[in-house]
Image (tube, rainbow over all chains, first blue to last red; front, side, top):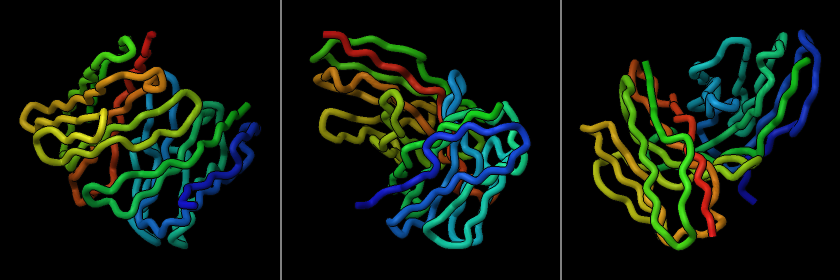
Length: 114
Length: 113
């Protein structure tokens, strides 16, 4: 089944404790992206990747890191999480960043930082 | 700066037609997406417009006017399951970057019997 998976789905952590949210897709997609969704602010793009070893900042990259060593995986790293990073996170992928290719979203990761 | 505006909430009746508007002011434009998001779930793709005009897909249609910075999503024969948030998003294309996607805050549609 074609899908985007994220782990963990739910995470409660403390300020400053490094964490990684994994994202994997099995569709051989070139483009992958991370978003956070907050009430009243909508979806905001954190980082995206056009292909292996190619990443770029979205609108809200501060406090986050990403890597794209393999085509299928695009982990999101929070080196020192803070309470303002409490949010719902979505990973997404699409065949390419070119026209007419829809993005498939993962199920989301709800992160709480205390 | 980048700005995308949509109404916050709308209400419509089952079986009716509803139009959800989206206006945008962005530096660079390379297409506009519409997504549907049910509460607690991930967004799902509805449509993508890059040229002016109307794209029809079953009960859903999406329109784009690039000169006016305007799009709408038209939902016909509304069903209760259409109660969801509808997200408008613009794909940017500037400074060599083609992967940046900006979302509006979404329109929460409630369909009443």
